[in-house]
Image (cartoon, rainbow over all chains, first blue to last red; front, top):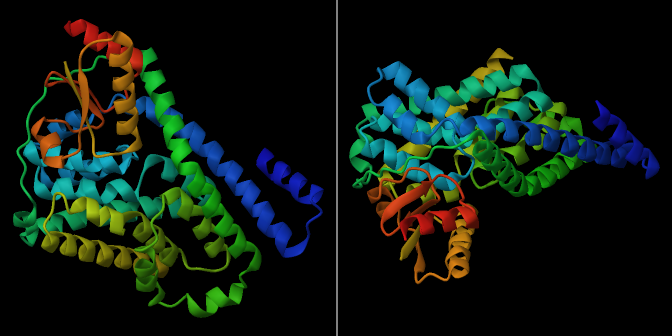
Length: 308
Length: 79
């Protein structure tokens, strides 16, 4: 692709060689590539999404059987908007309308972990195998997590809210939808771009300067998986910022399962997320939620290391 | 006229608030724009997608950032 030529050109114009050249090349190439994919996907999906309103999905989920309902909830989690500030109102809307507690939780788990733009960027940067593993792993953690928390009787720790009804109906024309998609894409790109630049920068440093045997020596064991999850909790960034870091770690020999566990942990488990959840859950439920998700991610990571 | 912007405080909600302020100023109508942050209150109004815009207690927009002109149209539709 043309990005390779651009980064090669800049690196040679700067007269860089060796490790610095490798790092700068990585930084320019991946920033260009990720930004390009994001631009296309966010615009396209942003348009399609104007057709999926959370209200419709809520109505759809109400009378579904267990498996279809949980799967539906996790897929909705994937296509729901990036902005994490929408997650809580949607969650409450589900609960208020009688969508089962577990399915609402599944949505809550999947939403920050997988989103459609991340899927395309993962595919472009890391290939289809890893992307499929990430999606299937994320959906599994979300579905099993929601199901288990319900079965273990944690519903009583959810705070209850009165949920009202509003008659707001929006009839959009194609032009409205395009305008909305464009505004959305601009906003998202603006907020994600810094994460991409910093993330690719860290990835570039790892790519250029961290010796391979440092990683293969210390980070290939099974214990590295839970360690990756623990390290991921205090790291709070957009998933787009983690992908380039993970790319270079994989290049240096970090096992696939460990890498995926790290990405999932960064995205799904974070202190700001828990603070947000505090509004709708009591601490017993938050603790159980964090525990089950962590165990789920660790299991997925170890399984993937075993498979690949 | 009572205009409320419902949202938990993300950039989009701030933008909606700014647009609403601008709309009433440009129309020179007598009204106030307030923010509704409380999760419980947002739920009570039946709003699932934020930001949402309510005029005189009725939800007019939900899940998108309305432009200044759009808000002006909504206000004029009521008067």
